[in-house]
Image 1 (tube, rainbow, N blue to C red):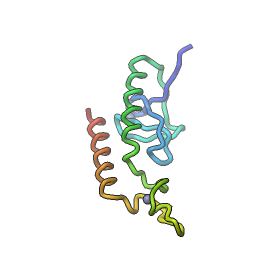
Image 2 (image 1 turned 30 degrees about the horizontal axis):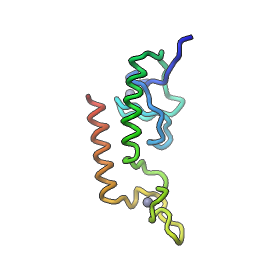
Image 3 (image 1 turned 30 degrees about the vertical axis):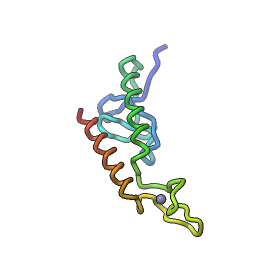
Length: 116
Ligand SMILES: [Zn+2]
Ligand SMILES: [Zn+2]
């Protein structure tokens, strides 16, 4: 039996499962597209595709900690979860300079990879 794997509907690049992008379960490292379960395509699983997927997973796992996608709070952030009161609704509304730099760097890496 031939196994199948999720690939990008645009370019056939193996999709990586991630929660980096809100509302999308899959991410394409090549075109930076985010896809929900409904939009994935399928292709035969091959050693080359599997390898690409593994590499993409590593990159995405490494970078996803630096990318803030707009929704939600950050667990151990004092502004999101102050000792008193509600806290700010979105962590992105009070990013530190360090977080902004990390995010810019992560964005740049993704952009470079996409055009490689
Ligand atoms: Zn793609
Ligand atoms: Zn926060």
